[in-house]
Image (cartoon, rainbow, N blue to C red):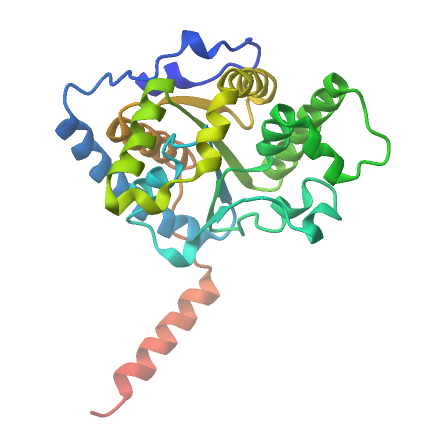
Length: 289
């Protein structure tokens, strides 16, 4: 199955230079991927309805990637058919003072999906081992009582995050993690489009361009994150994103495969519940008019 080539093994050191950003196989054309995406969008809607009805399991989807990797567009296209009542998207920005007064996972735990729903984190608690690693001066704002040496701090957070995700899975909240892998040249192209297209000017952020100077540092942080936090219970997938249409199709395919593997079905009614249905039917049929 083609999606397996994007799966990050739990025991492998990752080098992003060895992973393509423009792979489009098995699709021979954009139209073919678009057709598959539409089929998966429809299937995802069916599966979400059963997930909601069962009200036993939940799904947490994490999207990570450097600026302009396509996180917003992935949410827009992949989740276009789901019922908004059963899906919540959260975008995490610079932490507030209230959030900084708590442990670093607190603000993420507040928005975990309920049973029967799909939660999407556009950026996530992995920012705590990415942005803070590239900009360690930001750690001072977290007011850690006994600061550890950087290497030990990141190792500790990887361990804590892995344990947190194991806890979620043990309690019925499944976790899928997507790293949207874009080339430096394609990021530049997308930044230029924001500058040159009036309908995209609003997306431009001078801070994004400044962060581009830290490309190598971000790459190193991403590689360490992927190498240390892809587990059997909460795997990472590295998705080639130079072609947005391919990324959308690949992410949708993996989500649908995961939900299909759960063998979701409509809840089975007990004998008493069937009796209640028959009684209700008789009452309705007995109404006049």
